[in-house]
Length: 70
Image 1 (cartoon, rainbow, N blue to C red):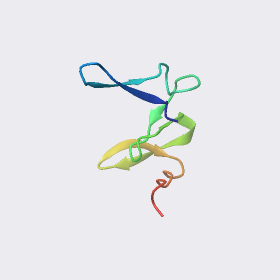
Image 2: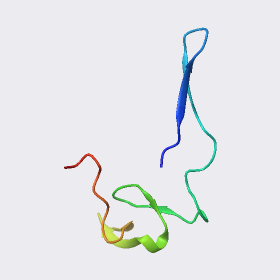
Image 3: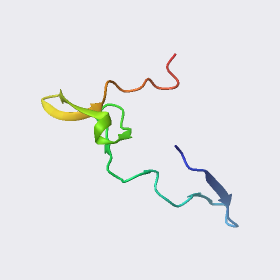
Image 4: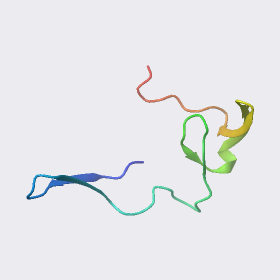
């Protein structure tokens, strides 16, 4: 979920980008990010796995495929 952004060129020619306020995390705020894909998920949608000798949380059962992968 991305928020709308807009840009405006000021009188001196600089372009500034601004985002709408608010948090992209909905609900109670109890989320963690997946080690592989980086998406934020609730703890019940994550599982622990050994990655590079450490225990990390990843998506359960697996990370979704990227949109541009065909």
